[in-house]
Amino acid sequence: MKKYLFTSLLLSSIAFGDQGYEVYKNNCMACHAELLTKKDVMANMNNLKAPPMNEVSNRLKENIIIADKNEEVKKRVVIAFIKDYIQEPLIGDTMCHAGAVERFGLMPAITHLKADELQAVAEWIYERYENMKF
Ligand code: HEC
Image 1 (cartoon, rainbow, N blue to C red):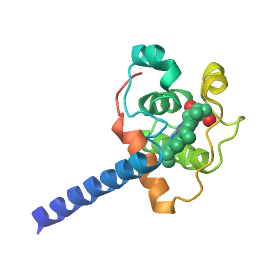
Image 2: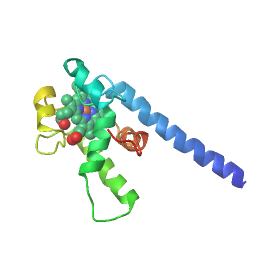
Image 3: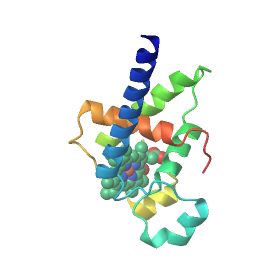
């Protein structure tokens, strides 16, 4: 019984990560590459439409600073920001370098995603790049 519970918990978290990756592939990948080094970005600046997702993830984690030391609280704040930004990108909200916004322009709003898809993709962005620097 315990084993069953563990397996089903494991499966459901894998399924959620999968859903996030699917949402990313279908809605974000055309502009945000999954993983590029800073060097790759510099070398391919003219072909890129947006910062790579590892840069986005890293930048949000570095910039969003909360008083609470609890990592789970920080994760929730970052996820809330991402879900918000997808639906309504605003020049006053972006944490991108000014130069990047000038180069790429502001992200167009994506308004067709369902609540569970927004949650899944935002969690995926947080977890996919855990402990990775850009
Ligand atoms: C048509 C191209 C395009 C698509 C599609 C796109 N983005 Fe973006 N995104 C951008 C650009 C350009 C920026 C950088 C300028 C800005 O911050 O608005 C950006 C910035 C962001 C930021 C803010 C980063 C920061 O530092 O503030 C987040 C978060 C983000 N995108 C998430 C997503 C997610 C999640 C998806 C898919 C559901 C997605 N984007 C789809 C072009 C796109």
